[in-house]
Length: 274
Ligand SMILES: [Zn+2]
Ligand SMILES: [Zn+2]
Image 1 (tube, helix red, strand yellow):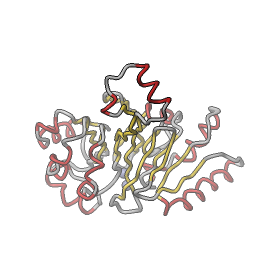
Image 2 (image 1 turned 135 degrees about the horizontal axis):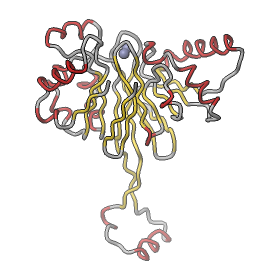
Image 3 (image 1 turned 135 degrees about the vertical axis):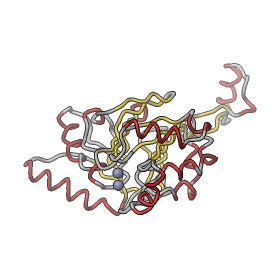
Image 4 (image 1 turned 90 degrees about the vertical axis):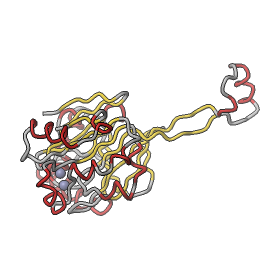
């Protein structure tokens, strides 16, 4: 079951429950973070940004490729940590042999810090996260042209004249749209605070109950208390999406624990994604 969250000019559709399935599509950006079991709502996304290869995040990759072929859509671009690229290719090849058919896809190995262009004006950078297997998080940017301050207020003919003289009247600005951390301890938030300046920040929050803090540390996941401690770091995002809750909690537990733990500054911008 998926859920739709409308967050300003960003729409998330997806699901994220620990050990069951994680796949979050962002329609406006033509991408999904992780592919879960290859759900139908993600089929239209040209780009898959894969954080790591735990099955609940990655098992649907071959199905996603096959579904897109069936729907006559372009081969998907699958971005993933460079060190798991070969194993993933072998896995997809095994499915091709099992099903006696060839599929088309682009596997793109990703290294932290580098820039990857998905289309004109849309790119992402990855950052390392800390989990039990190779993993990374993603920050997606839009690039827009903005009139330089000294030219604001000029009329059309004046702008045309400047352009005809070859004068550059715009600056290119990078707008951080969405950050998806994926499964991780809390430490990337401290190491890469700039990734928390996106309009939408999606964090894993596997554990909520106060007594489960040691479990979060042991399993390389995040506890809500660790997010609360970093409320100041999260002041710039417009929306904070908490996800990937453990199956040990009911939905009522999640809402109750989140309401009890979050300070007012976070509560008003927090959305819950199952
Ligand atoms: Zn997970
Ligand atoms: Zn995981």
